[in-house]
Length: 187
Image (cartoon, rainbow, N blue to C red; front, side, top):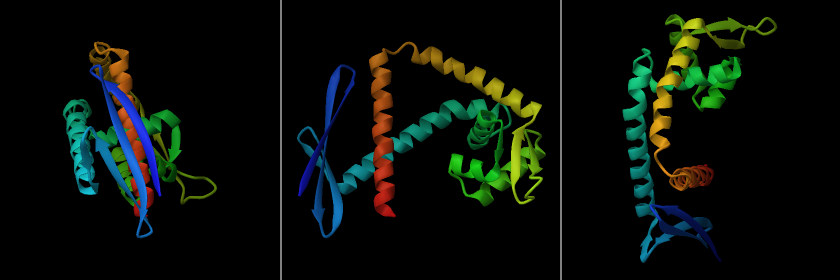
């Protein structure tokens, strides 16, 4: 059985069509992507996705790492602080799920952030196993400065037409959808 899904997006006034074919074989779902005249097999598609992710990660690190480093933080630590800032006070368990990091690892990172004065860690009154986190003034100031520095990116983005930014966002959403499907299929 075949199922065809056509996805269109526009970039630099060019329309890109991505046809995704699903077919049953050996009780597994396999995907093939056709772009233009070229059919990408599973390996080519995975390699292309790997290259895109690498490029995105490298680009993000190149732009955002200096901002995080200027506050004495890593990108992951800034992400953790932003998450805590968003919720005001958050348990280590909720933070672990929210940033998708193993609870033991996130606990170690939070101890380090506490030692450096960015967060307060408090134990629950009813259940001492529950540890909650809140930003300190130093943490709030660091996040405020990070947000100010990131606003410079807005100036650059404002130079691009809305359609181009929408195409990029659409592409990210499609990529995220692919990752979600792949992770479900792999489990």
